Length: 400
Image (cartoon, rainbow, N blue to C red; front, side):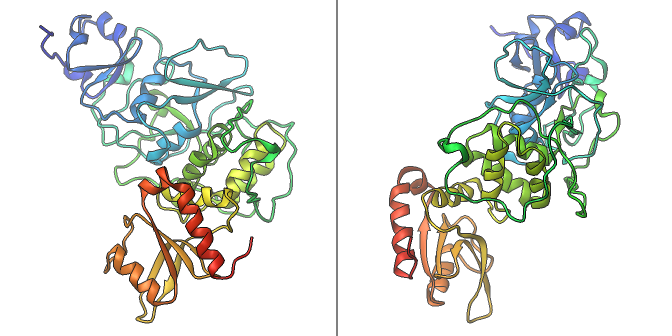
C-alpha cells in the first residue's frame, strides 16, 4: 500500500530539496514517496498540485545549480510569457561562466558564457506556477530558507543582464534585416550552432527602453535572489540565444511572440545582432531576426510563413488589414497584397462578427483569392500547400 499523503503546511505549493526537508523533520523518506509529492529530479521534489509546466522545471533545476547560473534562451522566453517556448518535458537552458564545469544532469542544457558580472535585476512578466516561488538559486544546502513561504499569485522572474564582452566590435545599426531564404554559411535550416556565450546587449541609441509588461497577477520584485525565482536573461538576450540554439522554425515562432507581446523590439534585436555579429551564431541570429514578424498570432502561423519563405515564395504580410465594401476591416493571417492572395489558417482566428467561412466568402467577394490551410495539412501535406500557394500567386501574376 502506498503511504497516505502527508503535506505539512510549510511545504505546501513549494519546490524543495528532499534531503533538507528530511533533515528538518518535516517529512520522512517514506512520506516523500506518497502522492502528495512529485519527484522532479534527484533530491528535488514539489507539491504535486503545482502545474506541470516549464516554470516548474526551471524551479527544480535552480535548486541544483550554482548561483552564477542564469536561465536563458527558450527557457527564459517561457518565463517572460511565451508559453509555447518550452514545455514541462523540455530541457532547461542555462548559461554558466566558461570556467565553471557542471556535471551532466538530466533535463538540463548547459551553455557557457564569459566571466560572470554583478547581476542587474529588473521586473518581468510573472508566470502562473500554481503557488509561491521555491528556494533561491544556489541556496545553501541544509537550509530551506524562504522556500517555505506562503503561496503567491504567480512566479516572478529576476532578469540578469549578460556579461558584455568588450572585444566584440560595435557596428552601426543595419537599416534592415536580411530575409534570405537559406541560412548563412550554407548550413541546412535545421542546424543548431552553439554559441560560446550569451550576447552583448546595449539599448539602441535614441530608442525607448523596452520594458517587460507585467501580468495582472503582479510581480515579485522584492529580494529576488532569495525568493526562489530563477534568474533569467532579459527578453532581447533570450531572443538572441533562442535564435542561435534552436532550429529556425521554432526559433522564429518564439521571437515572433516576444515581439508581439512587446517584450522586445526590432530596434533592440537589430542592436544585439550588430553587437554580436562576429560571435559564433551571430549571422544565424540576424537571419532568424529577419524572418520574425510581430503580426503572427500562433506558432503554427509563424511556421507556415517561414516554410513558405524558405521554399522561395515572396514574404507574406502577417495580419494584413483588408477593408471590404461594407466598411468592415478583416485581418488576413498571411497575405500578398500586390497579388490579392491570402492564406487563412484553421479558422481559429475568426473575427468578431463573422465566422471563418464568412470571412473567406467576404474576402473572395472583395476580389481576393483565399486558400484555407488547416493544422493537419501544415503537418502532413506541406508540399501540397506549397503547390497551391505557388499556383495562386502565379495565376495572379507572380513570377519566380
